[in-house]
Amino acid sequence: MSTQTTTTPRAARTMEESISIVLRVGVTIAGAVILLGVILSFIPALDKGSGVDIDELLDTGGTTVDVTPRTILDGIADFDPIAIIQVGLLILLLTPIVRVAMTLWLFMRDSDTIFIGITAVVLVVLLLGFAGIV
Amino acid sequence: MSIELFTLLIFLAAIAAGMVGSLVGLGGGILIVPLLTIGFGIDIRLAIGASIISTIATSSGAAAAYVKDHLTNIRVAMVLELATTFGAVTGAVIAGYLDPKVLYFLFGGILLFSAVPMIKKLGEDIPKGVVNDAIADRLRLNSYYPDRNLGGDVAYNVTRVPAGFGMMYIAGITSGLLGIGSGALKVLAMDSIMRLPIKVSSATSNFMIGVTAAASSGIYFWQGDILPEIAAPVAIGVLAGATLGAKLLVRFRSATIRKVFFVVLVIVSVEMLLKGFGIG
Image 1 (cartoon, chains in turn blue, orange):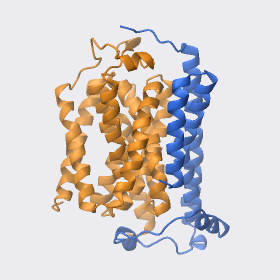
Image 2 (cartoon, rainbow over the protein chains, first blue to last red):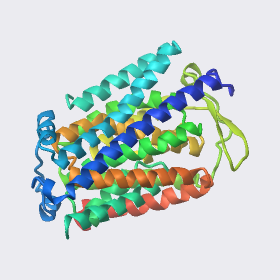
Image 3 (cartoon, each protein chain N blue to C red):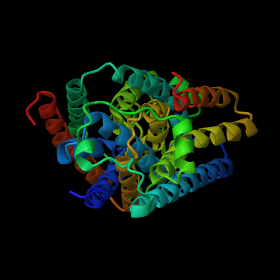
């Protein structure tokens, strides 16, 4: 029965603190950008009409419109609150991915070969998924 | 209903979902999907899209707190994320081919299934007599965590890693398919199969949920299934709720958490099954 940990408490703490900071910062920025978009969407002058009405929202009949980097950039150029919310949502989606990238870097620093491999594979799957390639 | 009132109601519902979700180690998505479909009558595809957002928000918000409290086992999480991310991508691809009724049915079924094993061990705080298996030894997965109720650090071992890994692949598929963190299956894999203490299972599950959801989120996002009008109040509400929930977790006893977890699972699963049968 092995109960002792081989990672020193100090190294573990450092990794935990770094990860905690990445998550906190990512979520805070994402939340702020999304909130900004929501507040702007309540300003009538900025309503581009892209905000669907409730009935339409509740019954799409299963059809949704594709989102592309182009539509988001155009929306931002247009100061469309919806595009700003989408940027915030993307930051939120990226937060766990950045966390994994950070974890990879920390394992590399510790020369932890097996975990470098494991984390690298997870990161690749995440990036492909994020790009919507798979 | 005006869009302002609609946003406010979704926001308030999301706060509640985020709080309960983080308390029991679920992504919050498990509560968001029924709330949006049954409560607001929103299309299940869009509910799943918004749920992925809530799932990532809950996980990241609460995980930031748990990780610092040393409740999360990062090495166990990393190994199992290998299984969940592959599963999530598989699930998101399959989801495009399924009838919404099937999604409801799967949602309810998976929840009910994951509730059953919880009754047997309801109330056990720390698993006893667990010995590391070969993989856990090789990967140094055993660790310790501070337990306030027991006063001091509790060392624990990790067993049956391959079985837990297999369960995690299924959890990943479910996550990609239904937009939930599959926290129920993750906790089940770590608590019942790998025999980690329930608080470590909950925190590590929460930690993994964001990464699992992120693997499939891109597919939903670019398809337009993540509608900003719904996802925005859900994200902010769930973030607020999860932060609150994480602050409360360290004060509750494990047995209390398990009981809440069990009741929530049963209620939600019955509702979703009824929807799947076309009744609800």
